[in-house]
Length: 329
Image 1: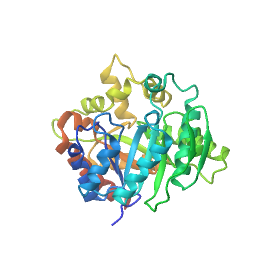
Image 2: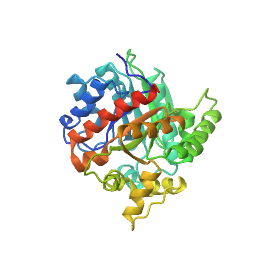
Image 3: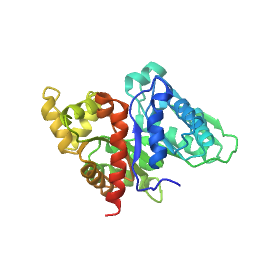
Image 4: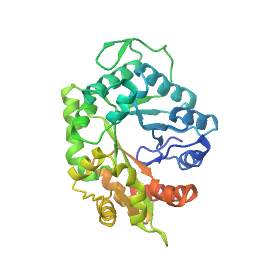
């Protein structure tokens, strides 16, 4: 049975040393018919290879990358990797790409992209055209491509762009199938990102904007659990990144590196980190859907980091069940 488009997806948020570390989450996605299994960029066991390994183990579920870094691969290689996953698994794939920070880009290419938006626009346009069976003729500032993929039938591959702020949302609106967001509160999605996506789509003459997939930190309330500790564990690395801090400030979420208690309270209050009973979490996630999010990725990072895999998987299973009950209310 295919996943219901209303169901949440499952996100494995860490960089795995081995595919076996992700297998419990892949098994959960298959067992619960979650919408998709998402993985992030990994500099340990490489993301595409982990997903292919899991498919070979029998965990054939729709998958997504949220996000892999486009400076690592030429668009031809990126399209080939994404298509290979759809061929190996027989399942739909979201190939999500992000720009990386300027230092990372410089380390690979000698200098940062003068225009990250142009780099993303040209890259995604080439990947999408290749996956559509087109021959690409492109000579741009960030890549050169003259050629096409060998024709093959395969499951649908959507091309996604990591989006946090309105400028990149406008670019994603021009070329992406999916806008992929992290830690973006519902009101920010509705009031800031959705209009920018629509603006970009209109500029490009598209029939509509990309759909939105949003990763949301979740944790079930249990005896002995401290939601503040979990919230800080979940968000700590992203809070160090200036572009996340800037996005949260624009969204009205007060992040203070010198006051972790206040920061945790702000994350929980804004539903950047959603904690509570499974039913309370499902109700909060419904607000994301009302804001325009098409696909909610359940991110158990806080619980995974503080309590381990079994606790994180148990949370996700209860939340998925609660979301299904919420959907029929």
